Amino acid sequence: MIIPLPGNSGFSLQIFPNIDINETDLLLSGNPQYNKRWNNFSNMVMVFVCENLTNVTEVNKALEVYANKALHNSTNKYTKVHNRIIDGHNGILIESGKNSTDPRMIYLGFYCLDEVGGFARKLVVMVSSLSWNDGAELLMDTVHVEELPKKVGSWFLIQPQGAVVQIDANPVKILEKQFGARSVDQINYAYVVTVPGQVSAMLPESLGYSGTKIVEKDNTTNITIVASPESVITNYLRKSLDADVMIVGESPNLYEIRTNVTRDSLNALLAPVGGSIPQVKDAFTEGVTKETMDDTRRVLYSKFVRLGFNESKIVILSNKSLAIYLADLDLATAQDIAAKPGKFEIRIRTENNQSMHVLYGDAVEFVDTPKGDRNGEWGVPFALSKEGAQIFQKAVIDAGATRNPEVHPISMYLDKDEIFSAPLSPDLGESIQKTPIRSLEARVGDKWWNARDLYIHLKGGAIPISFKVIWAGKAPIDYYEKLALT
Image (cartoon, rainbow, N blue to C red; front, side, top):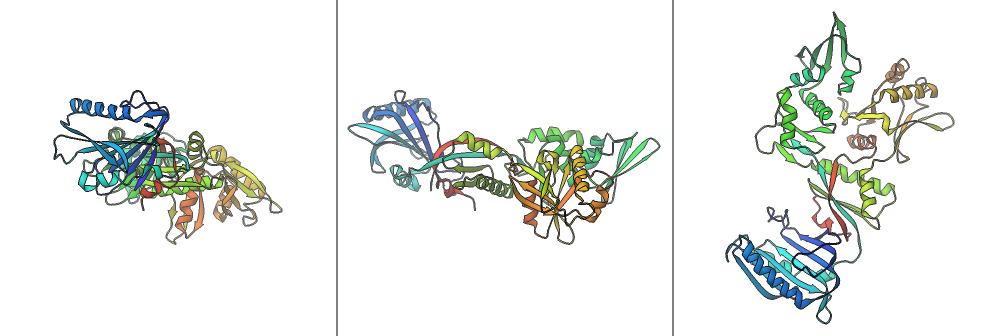
């Protein structure tokens, strides 16, 4: 299979110092059997589009000079140059290795395209890490560069910033550090944190612990937290890294950290709480899970369609890379759209089927992962800012939602599309009548995938990962799809 990786303009090719290059396309041929070289690809083709017509004879001479230099400057002491027909074109083949039987022999093929009267418009450079008999010759002779589709659009490859890790840490030491506690006792499924003096009632919630019980006595505060050891570790990582952290596996527990981290940086973070990453295989894996990549693809595609970019493609290449195609759109705009969250809004129905604005997404401080109860009902917990909770309280009281919730449901919108609508629960209506409530939960019924989608929407339609762009350029629409993970 052949896919193009976008190149760059203004490229200077050292082999041919007298040739100006104004466009470069890089194509890769994948073969799962050969997965340890060439970044999981077994064949590579570069198509250089020359700025001016290039003398083919000069190109061939330059290749011979290059081959001789490679022989003297490389540890590969076996280098041979052959005149050869490659894919039906007169070309040169260079084989380079430690000796004539080196299993890691590299084959480089060169030929010119769009040739008229001894001058060419394109130079094709082919590299293969397959042995000649195992496929290099066949691959070089079947690329048919001149037949590649001409319709191109903007492609860019993004690399998720994150890791999936195992963590050994002591939740008691974490709570001691977070609360500055005098002591922490674990009782059944709860931790009792004893803190000298008084603490703010909002402290546990600010650290990610909702539903706590606070008791003050004799200049001492006891905070009871119902939480599992894993959720304590997750909260510590979230607050310390200011990033999403999810539990994605059990036995052993695996944590997906959705920001740029290294093993060393995590060990440094965990050391003060008696934690570390175990020295075992697969305890630290760069990238994110397939489920997270699927969510990323779904969010991006929905966003592009909402904005009118119907001819878009999002292709998962691995847990470390995802390719995005947008037709007729420059790369800077495409990258901006991918990274920028949508416009999230909360509204409430008033009278005559009208609705009024309550809050925008900046009032949502935290969104937790979907939770299911014993009855199979799913919900998405989220927290409002202090000011947002006060605005929400006033809006629902003024609209009459606390007295007649069915008539005045709460609706959520992303880029003006309704994504959720439901009345206040009776308990919430009674509580919010008395005081602002920051910790809320949107209940969606028995479909977990609806909770998953709402979780993404509550985060403003932002993709669930941070990323960096590792390639950007122009390429045909269909090529990356050939390497999609299924």
